[in-house]
Length: 128
Image (cartoon, rainbow, N blue to C red; front, side, top):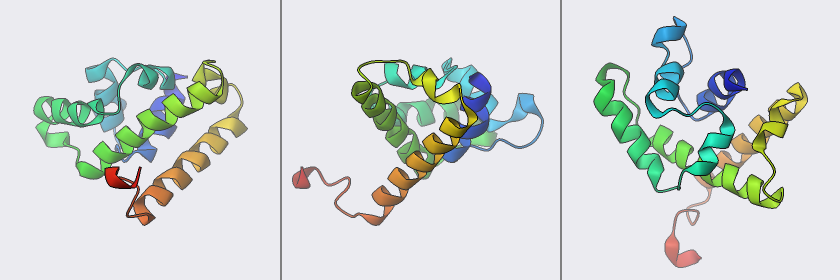
């Protein structure tokens, strides 16, 4: 499951998953924050997306991340929390037992990111 998180989910958020495994941005991010699986994102609050990026950039300035990655990580935290809540608090790891479900997760998350990027009211608190 950690492989799907590193090789599928984090690259969807904009982290680089190329090069030697020890120097990949995804590997460094997982090691720095101790996030092993998609379930670990459920332990975070959406406001912590900014801190994840900020702490990573301080520790690894040569492999820094920008605002798009920060927004995508925040969206991923919201997405995981929503999926967990709708699944009656079942583990998100169910998604990764079947490769097709990994693809469906990827497509669903990508469509959520696309909708957010094309809707100016998505992050507008006054529209809630």
